[in-house]
Image (cartoon, rainbow over all chains, first blue to last red; front, side, top):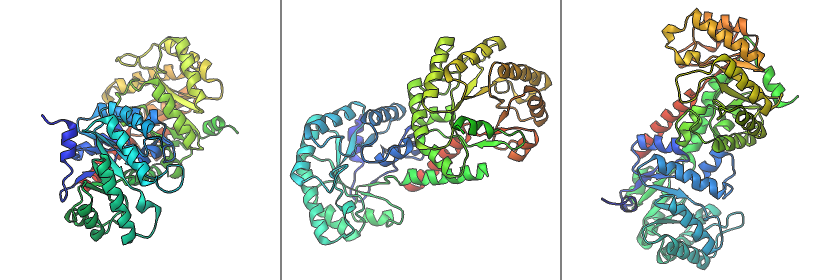
Length: 247
Length: 248
């Protein structure tokens, strides 16, 4: 029987993407499974919001790991965790943190290149070292979904930006990443170029107002996640229900 | 005025405080944004959201940590569904009450079922337990003493004999220092009103989907209406439908 690592990796098919409806706790995980989810992904922002912390590694690592463990204990399907910047800028310490995460039984994680709590992105050579260290620590099968935050740091989504995205994607692939995540990448031609030039399954995020999933599917996307939006929508609905109940 | 005093004053017979139960800091913040005057957790909701069974299967460390996170996330008074206080022994109850009050919560529900059984503590035991809890939480803390009589009996058996038992318990709990009395499961408004008239502390009813309206509860002189696990269950159903649409 295929392991959850294999099942999860095999779900990343360019042109037939795995859809991940991001969750934050056991209850939301169970709701996604009842809805037919084949795999689960947490979002760091919803985990933070649900528990009263700001995003950006303000969720204590012990809470993040315990939350992952609770979800793993409740479900059978593969779970990947949004692990932000692995709670350390130091490659070895970050890798040790991802190794702790792997022990919970998750099949993978998101790992981002922005300087959390600082400005901009980690230089490419530094980010490559961080990914290599993680790969070394977690073995071959763990799905490292290497994220670039280039699109989140600018409003100008031009060819020069895509040049940088492609450069990072290729370097992350060489460093041992399993997937490439470019939140806010949305343009079909830009997606097609990244798919063509970066030898990793491409993950984009579905945001309110984003193009239809079929367009991205046709462009070769392999994974579509939903980031903070499911939790935000749920909380807006909950607020509305509460208002109705108390008025 | 302290948060406890604010909260106590919101209990008005005939103009009930409505508590739309939350389970984590995010849901508490959403309820606060909706204009609520206070926040209440539901133990079943907290359990379901985190993969535990109800009935004190949520580890007390998690329950306390969750209470702390909720208190930090909102300005409003927070009352916690503390089940049976996670203890049978009175010194443990006092210690657990002290921990709960240390989170900044200003009240709790405290039930009379022997958690994990079909039984209730007898009145003498439960009044002693309320006293032990009070010793831990201090005076500025709203103990909402719950009787599980109506949850343990089928609704056909919710008659005046059972209501008399509930009155006996409610009076004893009030005399032992409870600030409020919670009678979940009872929807017979005549019996509700009889209990309200007799016990001498604000009475809390649990809203049930399809059950009495807020106006009905107000007419029966209820001072507090809470929603138990139903908000969480409704949100889970909504989330599942959203997820299904997104995954399709």
